[in-house]
Each structure stands twice: as structure tokens, then as C-alpha cells.
Amino acid sequence: MPSFRRQTTSEAHLSERVRDAAVEAAREGQQRMLDAAREVAQQAPERAHQLRAAAAQLDVRWARSAPARWVRERFMQFVMNPILDYYAARRATGSERLLHLEEPVILVANHASHMDTPVILSALPRKLRKRTAVAAAADYFYRNRIVAWLVSLLFNAVPIERKGGGTKDAGHLDKLLNDGWNLLLYPEGTRSRGNGLGRVRRGAAVLAAHHNLSIVPIRVSGTAEAMPPGALWPKRLRGRLRSRRHRVEVTFGEPIPPVADTAEMIERVQEFFQSSEAGPAMRSPYRRRITGRDSS
Image (cartoon, rainbow, N blue to C red; front, top):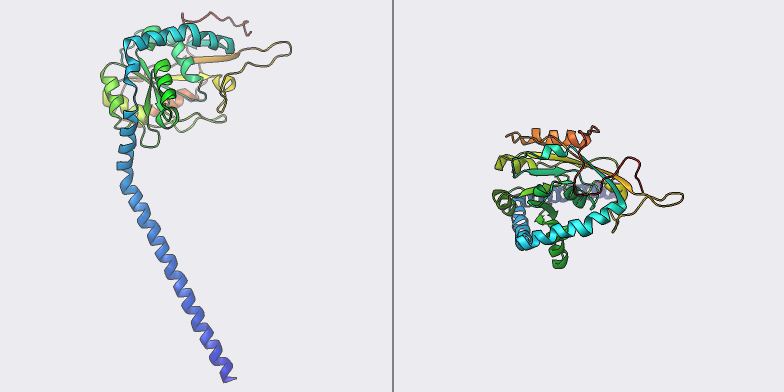
């Protein structure tokens, strides 16, 4: 019996030591995780700066030259507009709000499809469109040099880094705006999935406040059905006898003047994106007139 008691006491001491060692190991693990998190947080601003600098270096500046602008307008007129007309019955409302804008401005739109950019550009007045650059994700469109050249030439795209803080401290965007170029931004950062909007970021408002520029909100509907995320090409609606075009609408909102409170500006943009009200209709003169009965 005494031998049994000594063995039990010894096992109890061993179990206690194992438990203490486990607790100490857990504490050390938590401390290492905290130290790693602090190190990442300290490196994040520098990493963000490096990513934005890399995006600026990808900018294809010759795409904003006079010959490139000429090619871009011919492409829109003879290639892109006929393609869009085949797949979409398009309508622009609120275009009169753009007639007396003091440029440059920052255009911000909801984003549901790669079709959004050509649809928006085609709905802009020609004078405004010719001086509008489109912010494009550097990690998506600029991984391949040929693709980067094409999107820059055909859509006047400029690279931005989504993961490194977006438009903040983006020197090439500052230079664009200082040179009088308008800038089209998608503040959600990526195409929205499902029925809801993504989180609207403040980058556009920060740029607007810094340069004292107005924001023009743009709501696009119907493009996600015509060319959903993951699709490589638009599609028509299937009908009983023949296919039909999707109805696509671009609505331009009232320009939002710059204010110091960027959260207020973004809140107004978000409200416009979520609104179902359309402004007074005014059709673009740069595409075929579409009546309410024409859906072929």
C-alpha cells in the first residue's frame, strides 16, 4: 500500500509538470503570434508604399498621346459600339448633368461586370470621354505586358494597386488629375457578386478632397446579366424564337462637391448606388436610338 501511494503522488507531480509546460508553451506561442502581428503592422505602410510605387511604374503613358486617343475613338465608334449594340439595349439617363461640368472630375461607378467600362465610356459625352482615364487593377490587368498595352490603348486604363491602399499616395493618379484628366474609379475595388454592393472604399473621396474636385456618381444596371463575373464574352438573352438583347442602363447622378469629410462623400455615393430612382432621360448621341419596344 505505501508503494502504491508513492507511485500515485509521483504521477500527480508528473501530470502537474506536463500541465505547466503546456501552459508555458501556449503563452510562448501567443507571444510569438503577437510579435509577428506587430511586425506585420509595422511593415504594412512600407509594403503599401512599395505596391503603389510598383503600380505607378506599370503605367503606359503613351496610351494618352494624341495618336492613341485617335485610335481609341475609332475603336469605340467602329468596334465597341456595334458589339455593345448587339448584346445590349442601352440607355443613359442624367446625361444633362455632365454638360456643364468643370473638369477634371472623378467619376465613380458600381462594378458588377467587365462590361461596365465600355458601357460607361460609350455613354459619356465625347469631349468628356476623350479626357477620361480608367483605373484598372494592377494585379489583374497588368500581369501580362500585351494585356496591359491593350487595356491602356483601348480604354485608357491606368494601374492602381488594390491591396496596397488603392488610390492613397498614388503619385501617377495625382499627376493625371493635375494634368486635367478625368478619372473613372470603381470604389468597391472589385466586381460585386450576388445582389448586394461591395464595401465602398474612401480612395475616390480622398483624391477628390486632395485635389478639390467633384465626384460624379454613376449607377450601372444590367451588365452583370449580360456578362457575369467569370464570363469571357457577353451573351444575349434566350427567347422562344430568337435571342434578345439585355437591357442596360447608365444613370449619372448629381455631382458631389468636395468636402473635407470623406466619409460624408462616400456615404452619398453609397446612397446613390443603392437608390432605384433614375434622373430625367437624355440619350447619348453616340449610339443608335433605342425605343422601349426594341429589344431585338
